[in-house]
Image (cartoon, rainbow, N blue to C red; front, side, top):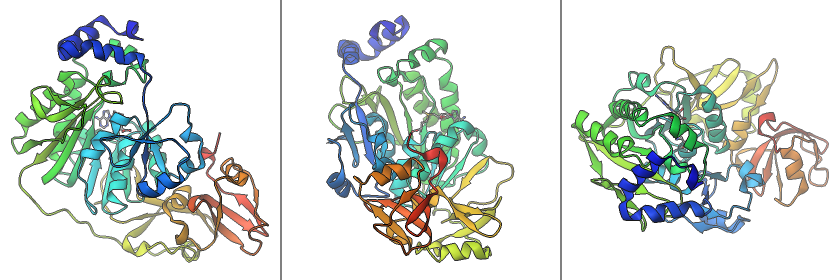
Length: 447
Ligand SMILES: C[S@@+](CC[C@H](N)C(=O)[O-])C[C@H]1O[C@@H](n2cnc3c(N)ncnc32)[C@H](O)[C@@H]1O
């Protein structure tokens, strides 16, 4: 692969790394590292380690990230379908880790798709407050929504806007913001060699102006006292420290906050507070992370909930749930019942793709619960459940969309039932006389 690296990139890395350059080049001989991040919205790290079938080694710069071996297949395990973890390149776990999120905050992820960092920001909020996840690409937002739903996060809104436009709608609003900027991806060359071609096609003047505008707009959206992380998976100084310097020049009310260094972390170039991760110094690919804070302090913004009257068929279904929906409010839109713990102010003409938890669809005379609701609930929050052991062959059958027979376990329950694996919900079905008609979402099925 080293032979595919363009000469101009090699020169840039020689100048950047000096006597570390040889070690960097040799890192291409080593296989990439694989990372799994426990979804603490669903399970504690301690409890996950008790049931994990994988050999896991902690990733030093995270609270809940682990290395696994490349021949293990965690994406092909029922616990993945239960949303107990997210698979993420280890160095990419750092940005969300360094943003100090507290419960009940308003958080913005500016460039969020496909959700590697949003899922962790949501987990850090523990389903309190609100996360607005945005990405300019509406098609990439589909993957983002699926990942957020799988993670069981119900305090998330998703929109698809150019961040620069979004900043006109929410001035000085958010307590915490993550800017995981589009970049030339130099840190991903070992993991995804095809990125080398994109690098060749775009010279080094392409990304910096975009990154500077996105970061500056994001800073406008941060409330005084709030904190913002800027990250990329590239090594170029132009896309990292120069973007930060531009923000510091344009916004005299922000300052850098020092990120604690783990063994193997490098400082930013002439920016001691920032962190650079290199594949020859840590077990991971490459990243740059900066943490900034806005001076001053203003109280957090708070938004009102609204009252909506609900159709009878939906109220009937809600009798099966013990989830505390009174903590937020419902809206009914396009025959869908959507619940959110907070409502953001009404906006004109924006591509809002999710405004909380889509609980399900209001059909003619009945209500059809969604896959997202199944994943958002805890087993004990639904009246009718069947809990299958992870070894039970019916788990995979259910995930494949097949009808399942549980006459050995239950022949009395009738109607909606939540199918769980070792206590963690997977999806809904409809049971009659011990036979479960499969309601697992088609696009989510085991392939
Ligand atoms: C590095 S990726 C984000 C990865 C994501 N944070 C994760 O962890 O899964 C950068 C994203 O920025 C989005 N993007 C590019 N320009 C944007 C803009 N002007 N406003 C909002 N999003 C933008 C791209 O569509 C892309 O999905």
